[in-house]
Amino acid sequence: MIKKIIISACLLISFVSFAQQGTSSPYSFYGIGDTRFKGTLENRTMAGVAVEQDSIHLNIENPASYASLGQTTFSVGGTFGTNTIKSSTESSKAQRSTFDYLALGIPMGKFGAGFGLVPLSSVGYKITDINTGENEISSQLEGKGGVNKVFFGLGYKITPKWNIGADLQYNFGKITTTTIEAVSGVQNATRETNTSELSGVNFNIGTMYQTKITKKLNIYTSLNYTFGSTLNSVSTRVTEVDGDPDAVTEDPVDTELKLPNKLTFGAGIGQARKWLVGTTLAFQGTGQLANDYNSSPNVRYEKYTKYAVGGYYIPNYSSFASYFSRITYRAGLKYEKLGLIVNNESINDVGMSLGAGFPITGTFSNVNVGVEFGKRGTTSAGLVQENYMNFSVSFSFNDRWFVKSKFN
Image (tube, rainbow, N blue to C red; front, side, top):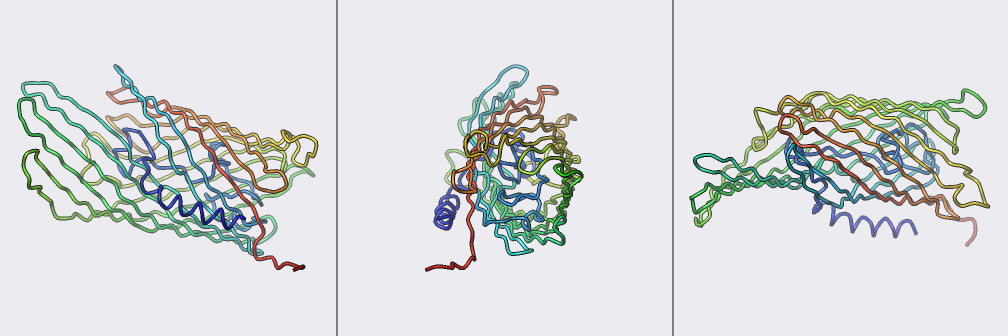
């Protein structure tokens, strides 16, 4: 059954993942766009806390987790999001639906493997800028696209308490930006289209350790490090003037963007299959992400940091009498300094998430739902603030593979 689900999902997502607009944020103009959360909905609804060595849920943030899988696990998720974008004088609303991830984890004794597809970043904005003066100039900016990540990871269980792992990630995608500029009193407008094809490889290593401190209580820790890497960008610029049939296409420009290294540490305490409270700290270096078409003198980049706390609670994991007692309830809080400075203002993201995991009776599979809300940016210094709310759903299917039947 799970194999049929995987094939159907792969065919669907391979079609939609390249066509979607994964963000509606004006801040996605800069760099390679909004960096997306690389993780499952189970972890996202705990604000990114992912410290437990889980046997039936995927943790695609730390490859060491694959060694703890007890069953083949397939997970897929998506989000419907709404944004209210406001400045000091006006506001507007935007909506979008996105594919979040597709991943498969396979246990292999002391080893475990995981692979899948997740978006690395998304670009999606429409901005109108009118400069009044002797000659009124109207500019319309539109961007779409982003970068996707295909990954393959391998984990190994050194001891029953200690896992290590590593994964290889291939990044690829396309970002297209269009600028239309018109001058009052001039009949023809100018259209400039920039298209960048991006590709690159990077690596991630991780380790997880857990141990009992009492008969019921466990301590969980997680550490993973993503190495800095190069993202190759080949950009083409086409300039057109309305009424002129000839477009000017410039020679492609090769640029090497620098993805920074990232260190993530997590720790938690809890009772297995009952409750967990944990925290995650993430630190990332300063990248070099500006391309020719989106570099600006009022924009610079800084180190990224994230602080999060979250956890889950299950009333009674093994209850036969009450289905609601087997539901997993999750929540989390986060604060992120996104690494972007515009008009000397750091762009920050503060959010809260809530979620629930509904078990599918008779299996280890489950359906997860979540809601995340918060704000990004500020209305100071002529900038905009985004108040967002995201509704997400995911499916996690579990099955036993590579087990020889004893009966025909």
